[in-house]
Amino acid sequence: MFGKIVVMSLSLVVCACTSMVDDLENRVQQKLQQMLAEKFAERLTDGIDVVVSELAKSGGYLNDPLVRILLPPPLGIIAGVASELQKNPDADLLQTLMNQAAEHAIPVAGPILKNLITHMDEPTLEGVLHAGNQGASQYLKQHAGDMVQTALLPAITAELNANGAVELYGKLLDIKSKADSITATANDVQQTLETAQQLQAEPENIAKEQLAQYVAEQAMGGMFRKIAQQELSIRQNLQQPML
Image (cartoon, rainbow, N blue to C red; front, side, top):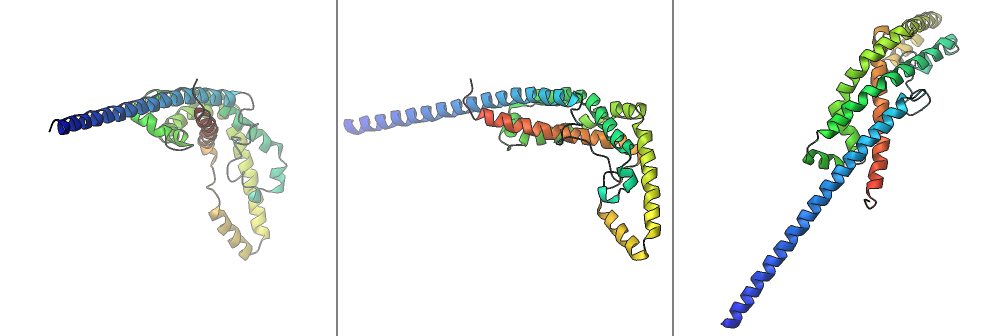
C-alpha cells in the first residue's frame, strides 16, 4: 500500500515538473517572438529612413529603373506615340520634371509610415513579422497608402505647376492628338476599328489635370517597391543570431 502511495506521489511530481517545463518553454518562446518582432520593427523603421533618403536625392527616382516615373498614358504607350513625339526633347524634359517633383515631395512619407509602425500593438506586429517576405510592405501600403498619397499630392501639384510640367504635358497631348488624327485619316475604316479596339485594352489616359495625381500614385508605388526590397534584406538578416 505504501509503495503505491509513493509511486502515485512520484507520478504527480513528474507531471507537475513536466507542466512547469512546458510552461517555461512557452514563456521563453513568447519572449523570443516578442524580441524578434521588436527588432524587426526597429530595423524596418531604419529601412524606411534609408529608402526615403535615397529617393529624395537628386536622381533618386529618375536614375533608378525600379522606381522611375514614366510618361503617363497616352504618351507612355510607345505603340501609340507619333515619331515626331518620340524625338521631341520636351518628352524627356517632362519625365525629368515629374521625377524631380516626386524626389522633392517624398520626405513627407517617412513620418507617416514610421508612426504606423510605432503604434502597432504586439499581436499586429507579430502577425506582420510572420506574414511573408512582403508582409510589412503590404501592411504599410494597405493602411497608410492613402495617407501617403494625400500628403504627396499638394507638394507635387504645386511643383508641377511651377516648373511648367503641366503646361508641357498639355502641349505634348495636343501633339499626339493631332498625330493620331492624321493617322486615323490615312487609315481605312477597318484599321481604325482595330486601333479603337487596341486602345480599349490600354491603360486609361491621364488628362492634363490628372498629372499630379498620376505622379503621386507612381511615387508612392515606387517607394513601396523599395521598402519591399529593404524588408527582404531585414528578414534575411534576422534569421542570423541577434547580437
